[in-house]
Image (cartoon, rainbow, N blue to C red; front, top):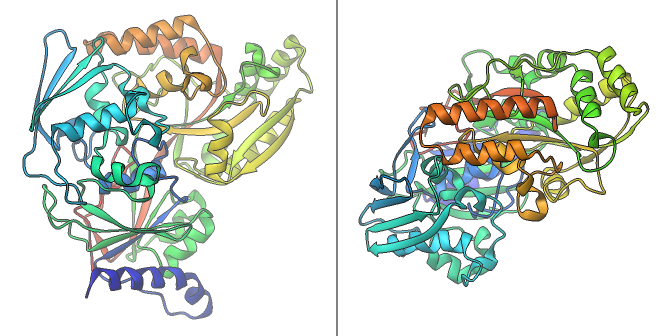
Length: 523
């Protein structure tokens, strides 16, 4: 059966699944060879250099390849579009040998010039396609001074100083390689017309309905077993659960804790994987009540995180102690303890700060990448804060709208906002969201405007350190300072989950939180 027909049939089955389930005992059936995935939101774009959400990355990792990738089941780097590489003794030059004979989905050649194009597009303001951005995670590659195509299959990166996370960042979606020819053809619309070298190639995007990708039979690492994948945005978790139970989707990510019991038995497989995740509240440290450290600490004492983890999240997470997830075992400061639930201490700190009755505007999202059960969690947090004397008003937004409000900074708008990050290296989250030079007006994600020169110095030192033990020491010191300064309310580290039906085989969750579907089968 032709791919196009299979895809349309899959979309039809998925789209009518809930209706069928509610009107008759017969389940909808998606077609064999076509995997229908229930995503948590509509993607923002399919340009890996232009997006930040894991929701989008889950699609992109199947359409594109990077020079390197994470080895299956780990966050360790292995070859991908590069077959090997050499690093200079001083740690400032990386020379990659590229895989030969690889083409992009549009038929153009993958080579050293294509690699140079990708990084120049992100980093060089004079590049003719720099205007296809913005590129919010170009921070990942800020150490790059030059990219040189030495010949067709050799590319050299020269860094302005040693940069320990460089290879790991190349494996992250921001480092995925796009087709220069497609960027040149589509310009700022490239994100709707993607072309990579990945196991699946883009077929169509129906806004608020589905993104469809089909198998790339010429993939350098072998053709995928599936014929096509349909990514359906289903923002409401209850609807996503109902679709899964009805048979309209085959794979559901981010299963609501309250729904886990519905997927017990032989018809479903539940998957769980710990990873580097942090769910936290950004506090506006620039203005309003949270400009005072005592008030920020009061909020940390006021929130009953154990109750959120056990009652709202049904034990699918652990209480967070600070800004670094424990999944980074080598860099995690085990001496830190989470702020205990102590409403009396919170009230005393508010009294000391003269902030009793402080009014707070709290941004909450309906759902999004790694956001767990954000409305329920937001409501519980609101109640805890009000119980110690805060006056909290919640404003709720759809995910992409929420990002549009939060990422540019909370100044003049809100006092706090929910946020979740899933990262690839202990450098990533604090460097992009806690440094003073990462304030939104400087291109970073420090939306609460936290600033501590000692933290800045430690983070800069850590990314230059080539010895992992030294990096670990610096990160642990940074965590202790940030814990004390409390620029965020540290809430939970999530154990990601997913559910598949009994027609899906060879699926595993990755610690990176990405979906890798090239080896998945479906009967």
